[in-house]
Amino acid sequence: MEESTVKPYDEDSSKKEQVTQMFDRIAPKYDLLNRVLSLGIDTIWRKKAIALLNPQDHEKILDVATGTADMCIEINKQLSPVEITGLDISSNMIEYGKVKIANKDLSHLIKLEVGDSENMRFADGYFDAATVAFGVRNFGNLKQGLKEMNRVLRPGGKIVVLEFSRPLYFPFKQLFNLYFKYLLPVIGKWSSKDQKAYKYLYESVQAFPDYDRFSDILREVGFRSVQWKALSLGICTIYSGEK
Figure 1 (tube, rainbow, N blue to C red):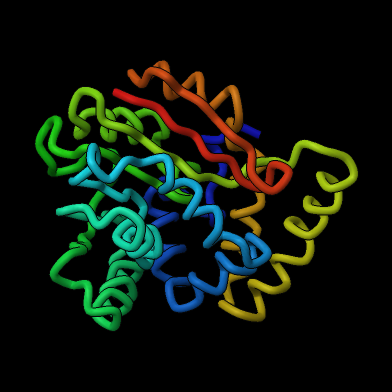
Figure 2: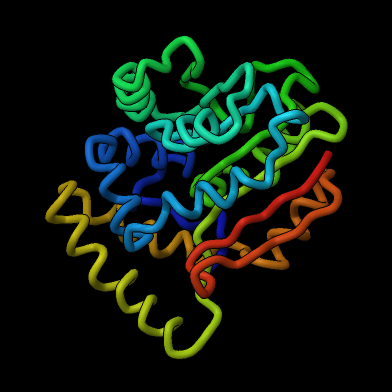
């Protein structure tokens, strides 16, 4: 299954358009989705990913595919940078994120906006670091999105990517695939009324070029010192690199 062919719905529109539609639909249940997908440990994964950033070196941080801003909130908690910008293609996700940020009295520190990861408005070299959690597999054009992240980073700036991956070891690999493929769509149909969205999530993880393949793509688009670390027996992987 090719990564570029995996779309949420059986329609003629582009992957980017369908992903936007999907996240607009499931935005009210997105936080629940993350807890269910990760078996409740996605918050720990985010903390581990953000721990790769140095507060002294990373004062202006961009979070791409920010969703409802969980990553932005955790970045502020751990690093207290001078500027955090969250970008997402789904306007509904951004609106839910703004509510969460306002409830935590962080609106003056975290700015959220609707935007396309493959064509960002930011100047070259503006940010010290860029993060994306559970979002790169949803890019319409993976390499173009990563090239844009590279463009907006200063020389020496760091990228940290957190993404679902295919578990590595028997029998956990088989058990998790059963959960992901068969149980999760049932939960999705019950919780968000969009079963196809949850089916897409399984298919997109299966098609995503994880581990060494994704590391090679990061190098191809211009990052160096690329590393990856599997978490929770490979349910999730952290990738990092420098411009």
